[in-house]
Image 1 (cartoon, rainbow, N blue to C red):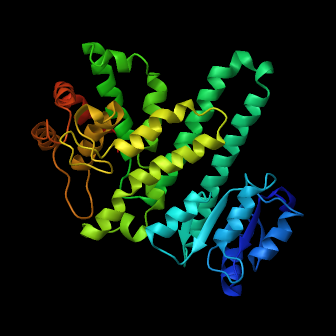
Image 2: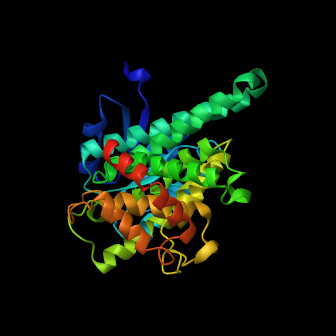
Image 3: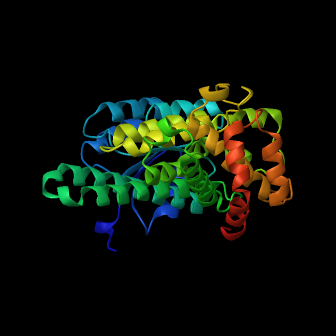
Length: 359
């Protein structure tokens, strides 16, 4: 690939050392422009539209927050993906950056391989979004292929974002793939038994299961020191971890606003915000109880907890499938929907098979 074919990355930081380290990490794979201030960034944007901006927050005169507000308010630059590079680690700072339009938040000093991977994943998401938009712009010419192509692109976006989460949270292994398989098994049994007919009849089953990949997408906003901790979290760390549900809903909302076709994200948003709610109202982030909890959340609660129980973690050994089944049963009416627990118990052998074959 020639330099002219490479994606253009603007690296904005008032620290010359950071600019050098960042450029050395990216050069060769991307066409990197180093920019020492927010003011010069805005001037460069008048001449060149990059494929991505890596933006420092703490800069004199114009900080990153001010710069991104201007970028997102300008029609010609609003769609440029922005990743914040910063030494700030508080969740409130991350939330502010994401709210202003950033797609990710990487703390400094950063790992060059991780930086490269995050950029690669986000650029791939942008390509998929652009392909989806181009498809819809030419809809009249492609109407016969519409359904197949849209589903393919939607699944590609979901898979890419889900893989980005697993790239950071590498202790979960094939968690996303297994939880999808558990959901599929639960849904098939629900349909067979004629349960929740009014709700389930409106589901596009393929889209429903695919959307579940994004249930933990909010973890991209959680600090690595918490997400990859090799021990149990402190109470304070656990409170921060809980915010991944809220971040997940917010991130999916932002994706929805950028996508021409966003119906497939409807379930994804519900999975993200509700999968840690509990039947007795003691869950989070809202504290919903009983059937106040969307069916998506009640289903994912069983799939998610079962997989956590049978999986090894740095701070615990895996439970046997049989013991995990007992724990789910004991949680009926407390953590889990009693009706869904009965469905689960009828296919516990299927769950065991999934846990042992998808590794």
